[in-house]
Image (cartoon, rainbow, N blue to C red; front, side, top):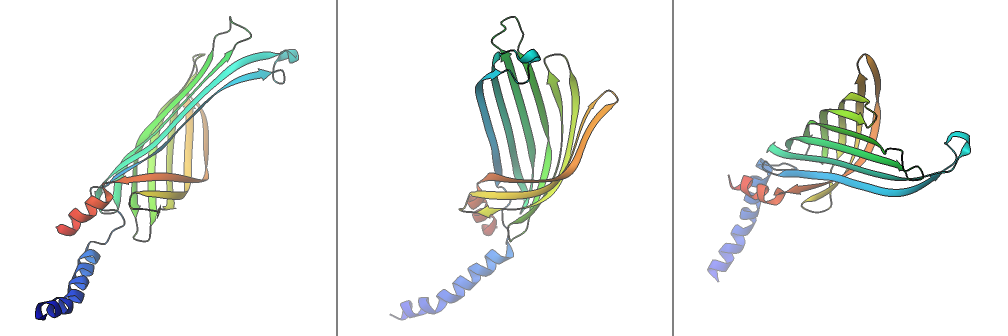
Amino acid sequence: MKKLLLLLLLLPSFVIAQENESFMFKAKVKHGSILIGGTLSGFAYKTSDNLFTANGAQEDGRLIQVNLQSKNGYFIMNDFAVGLNLNLFHENTKVTSDPEQEPFKETYFMAGPFVRYYLDNGVFGEAGASVGKHNFSDGFQSNLLEGSVGVGYAFFFNEKFSIEPLLSFRYFRQKKNDQIYSTFGPMVGVGFQAYLLRKRAHVIKIGL
């Protein structure tokens, strides 16, 4: 009985000590966690058009489109991640009513680094830059450049997954020889991210 009473008396002190230890290493995402997210979408349509064709002639075709976007990173320290953004888009248009006409293809690919820092309340800041190419099957090619800075919020609905609205300012430039097309302005989006090893990294950090 005496041992039981002593244990009950010491339990609050043990809990407080655990809380203090956790507070010393307080972070939203621990060092060693892995950030994974992205989207893959695609469709294949049969098309029928006499609106945009010459003389209103009927034109039947097939349209295939694929888009891959990914954001993957590693937390090199508490709440601070570095990673890689990837964006791949491909479109193939074929006029099936004219077998002699070659398919028209469009492809662009962009890749580049990003950094992200989290506050304890879930708010994070992010900055990134990407470069790439835009190619058409008719031989047209251009160079792409993109940069962005933004602020978002990570809503963790469990230990490893979050929904993340993000407000960012984006600069985009497309260049061929001396000709340039550019845009700049705000962009709003919502992402879905997975945080692998988040719990294990937390346990390891507390033990140090």
